[in-house]
Structures are given as structure tokens and as C-alpha cells.
Length: 120
Image 1 (cartoon, rainbow, N blue to C red):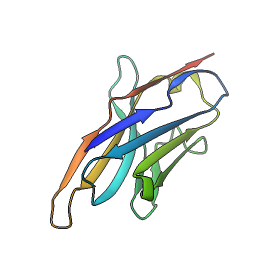
Image 2: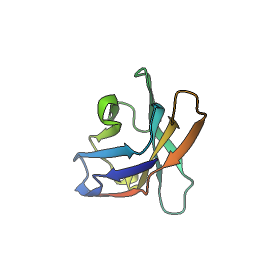
Image 3: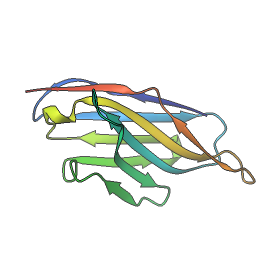
Image 4: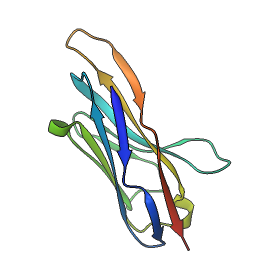
């Protein structure tokens, strides 16, 4: 299973970006998709996640500004980021908890990261 993250870039404060994470390979079910971020000199932190049933969870710092969603038919997850702030600057990583077959176990996969830079 491979995760391909895209959509990062440079944006001014107050702007928006939409990240995408496309999963490919042998996939029976994506149980959970998540976005993490890591700013320079800081630990990686959970930004948001979404279950296969659509339940979502957000870090307090992004509530009301970011929206996580997924398209199960396309095995793709999204992170819509609005009202961006300079402190949102980080490398954003997608993560997926995947079951590869009906009888298979669950495994955790990571995308390569996409850089989001928010200028003040």
C-alpha cells in the first residue's frame, strides 16, 4: 500500500489549501485516515482523523478551520485548511490504517509528507 500526499504550498495568512492523500495497492478497507504535521524543531502531532464510518476528530488548534473528509470509492482522503495561520507551517503527513484483505490484519502506512508554508 502506498500513500501519495499532495496539495501543499506557500500561502498567505488567512488563505486556504486543500491536501489530498491517495492510497493505492491492495486495499480491502481503510479503517482510519489521518493527517499529522511536524513543524521545525517540534514533534509530530495529530491534526485530524476520520474513521471509515465518517467520525472525525481534530486538534484543538485547528477546530473550526480545518475539515477532514474522505472518498471511500477513490481511497482518497482530504484536508481542507481555511484561515491558515503562520503557526500552521509544517510538513503534513497522511496516515492510514489499512486492512488489505477480508482475512488480513491491519497495518499502518505513511505518506511522504507535503510542505505547507503560511506567510504572515
